[in-house]
Image (tube, rainbow, N blue to C red; front, side, top):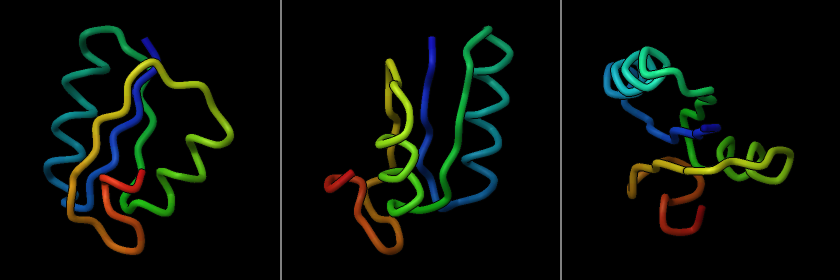
Length: 62
């Protein structure tokens, strides 16, 4: 499964990424909502996991 994680807290982002990769998923990451929006426009993800409160663009807007 191709997953995007959008999270501005580095430790939380790394933990989620590590766990999902360990389970065999293809994981992309974004550290803010603007990065996440750009990645979504360029890729087809099966699942997007996003923090609600992030810099530039909120998780709800993503």
